[in-house]
Length: 370
Ligand SMILES: [Zn+2]
Image 1 (cartoon, rainbow, N blue to C red):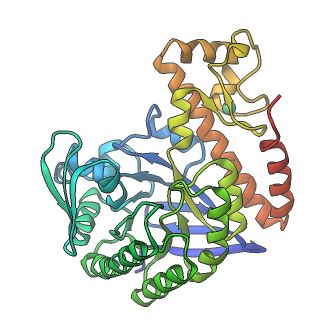
Image 2: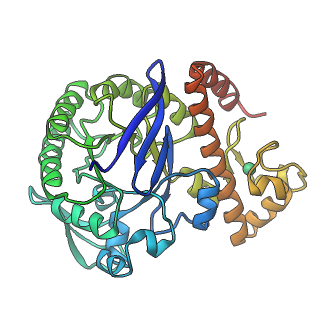
């Protein structure tokens, strides 16, 4: 019994819409996955994350293995029971955070040895340990462990990291015996030839889905789109394609146009906590003095619980005062904005008008604010 069944119901150009069916529920694609780093989508109760339209959330292996610990979560019934989220959870491999957050990292063929950013304790992440941790968490979609290099790395460094990541992908697959699904991650930076070799290696190993890694690391939207133009068609058309760590609302539209099915990003939750709200007319900063007596909702016409109940003036006051409710209301609006955008794209693909929707969206979202 496969961990997932992916059914594409409609395509429009390279864009596609469909359903990933899993034991814990269906995931409508294109899908946006809110990030629940420390077993919580920050400032949101699980039922409110669900109400926003999310079918799946993401958990972070690195953070959870350090605190409260994967073995502890397993003893407490697994991540779903621990945090009160019954639907699918995708866990990352820990590869990204171990390179970006931890200290004293030492990368060898075996894996990555590192010191915790919390207390300096020493740990090791390898393909086998990453898969073990994701299995202890009870992940529905586990990710292969890969080696990340900075976007500024040389072609030789990108090549070496990609080749090692493919060896680690094979070890990840061998270590995986969970009931869920396992995704491989294409690497190769901005280089078409490396991306092609990576896709070939992953397809030979065989995964339930394929992620595009190593983007959204500061290369800019134009470069990202250029890579997606050649990288996406290299991945099997009948499996889900997941663009990791992306992104801004217009990044999502650009990527859906190029055939991506799944996304995750901290942007709607993190920027909500600092006062940035997303609207169809582009982001606004609710802290701005011009909102101090503004009686409109954050985004007029938005059906989310924040916008139907509260005015900009009040949210402005809460955020400026550092009130917890301010973070909660902003996060909820932003998650609804992202999920409504995904639903609009799913509908547009089904009705063969994704290009029209994209042009209309870009026209409003990217126009300079007054
Ligand atoms: Zn709203």
